[in-house]
Image (tube, rainbow, N blue to C red; front, side, top):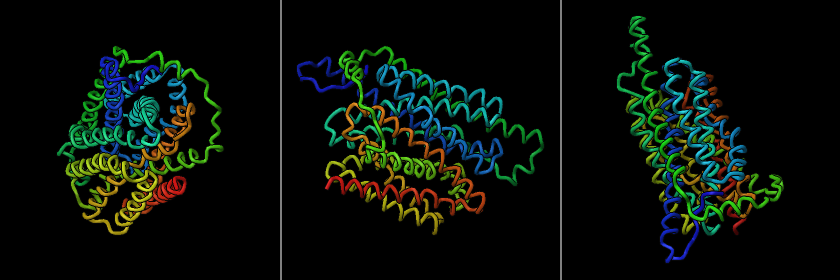
Length: 426
């Protein structure tokens, strides 16, 4: 590998400075991929109107994005192992930037299929980043505190999510959004102008993201990280053959991550639809509440990182998952405006789940950590599988509230995994 942060003596201030700078650059990736992933809850209702889709069709936006993680994760892991972290990260940043820039011609063509292709390419680049950054953070120190370090880095992912929902979303969804009854009163020319405006609003956020991704790629390219020679030597060591069935903890972790990502994507992606149809909010106002949700997610990461210093990772994961089961029961069976606060709670208690499941699953795998990380990233396909199920159930039942039983069920295996980790620790 070409990028590393190592413990060095205090006297070697310059190498230490380089190590800290490298660590900061890697942590910044957690912020960046959150910008794209957390624009999806805004993009779904927006393209649903612009492309005149039903809920099931709009859920394909999630599927196009998250299925890339399943397809690209292993190739990304191979690139990371063969060429090192630095080159894998640069590849991911440039690939993601290309996908972001494709949103401009997609909006010009008004083609939903074009948007799905752009999303897939964008997510393919993000897959490189997640495959590289997550295992890198876990091996920076004591394996027993890997969950704490990963939660710390993932806290910046929460910050990116908050920025996307509170600020970038406003560039996409304006106050001029019209209801179906208002659209029926427009002339054909005015209606075409309205849809043209909807497509136009998609361009700027993704152009901005593309430019930032290219700039960060240039920073990685021109930066010489400390101990590059040592990193490359370590990655050249052969790994033992990894048979998932012979690693029950990894196997259970992959399944659990599959359900977790499905739950996370469903909860946030359809929140605006839930808030406007069940809780009675206007779409523009719902984006503010989505920002509140993701603020809770970000704060949950910081609180979780602190609690993990005193509470076992498995125990905290089990407790948080049980709380989310109860909150989801309220969302599905009670609803109303009070359900908005239940959503905030769900996001808060979801915050530690991905990094905690990730770090517990790849713990003590040694040189097999990169390939195990690829398998864990492949589990993100849950974000492509469960949203269409929720969309189909919503279309069939006529109730987005009822359809939220899908993420409710997803939290049950997460609870079991946390309980199982408690038993392993004991």
